[in-house]
Image (cartoon, rainbow, N blue to C red; front, side, top):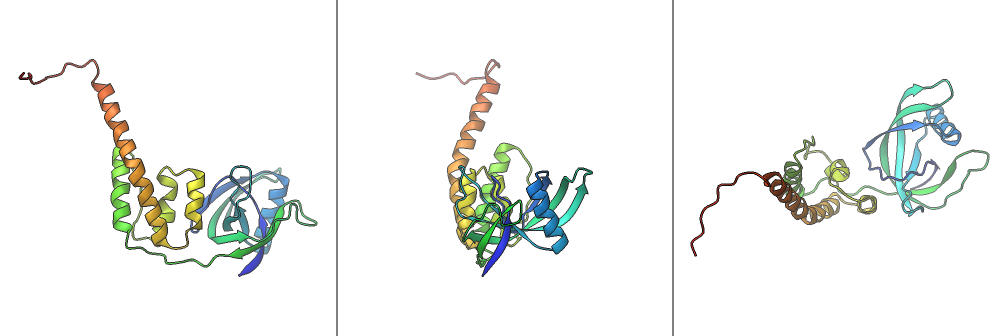
Length: 209
């Protein structure tokens, strides 16, 4: 379905269902967000990567005006609604300070996948190696969106995930990424252990020649 959105390009990738807190300070984006709040409209965040708009982004809904400052700045909470493809980009929109454009909204694909167990096994291994705690629920729909920012993807790889329409495709992408990353992280941990042991007394078995 085609629609027109006010656009707020950012150097990041947002996924449907993801919460995003924003500090709004530029006049053009203060105007954009004020209109979205007053008219209960959504806006779009097209990904801005390598100094260009590659073409896809996420439609956003302002969920909370957290704070409004005396000078007009705002702290807002927003949530990803769905994915869109840019049809055209106008900067600025006629009569406005901000950019906008027509977009095609992308219909979501399957929200669950048979690969979830394989993905969570690798996630558990990664976080165990890193000795960090990450809370997630593998029973969530579109589980890949919940963890894609937490596995060390580059922004280009995060954008690649955005383009994948089904949960199965996204999970397989993350599984392949973790298959590549886990041996590297494991080697790093072994190196750290060897460094920690350097200079310590060691009980070594005698060698028989």
